[in-house]
Image (cartoon, rainbow, N blue to C red):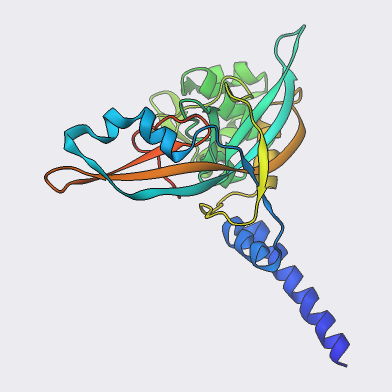
Length: 278
């Protein structure tokens, strides 16, 4: 009887973790981490906190500021994919594709930390391949198009394009604008290429202890969306979750004002203003 009870408990617990992982990726991740001690895979930093402080000494000491405490290290969960795609009608391109699992945006350039803006909205909306075609076309054309231009660009009949447009409006991805539609995001930024610009070597190591930012998006969500968005010639060769180390350094100026700086441990560069660690 005790054995049966234990087995039923394990089955229920396993089902609960699977449900959380599907419907609440961040919570599910915490539950999985609690149940297993499998090491995480982290990207090897190319810069130490001391090197970052030395390289950015002028910035960190501006306004007669002094560093408070020791640098804090937080890891951002990323999805690292190796992909291939049709570069031209005669060429196949291959390369890495990095996606932030905290905010759901693609990393366009790891050196400058430039990201997409608007892809996370599409992932949350669970858009279809047809809706991806609409959003992708509008992004390529500057984010705003008339209904007839959309129909011609997608090469479908009027009734079908109206259905797709209505679905995108219902999912709050498009709004009417003048005689057409526009993307419903502030300053949308969509990728022109299905690979990230990575100008440094990506090596990894295993770690069991890492303070990780909350993962809000699941791996299956991102891979499914990327496959739908980048089209039929796009293929994911491999995909794994990796952690990117971020250094947080706090300074205090002579008049008592505190300021926090974020630095990419892989490139040693300061993250742009407004970047957040979730």
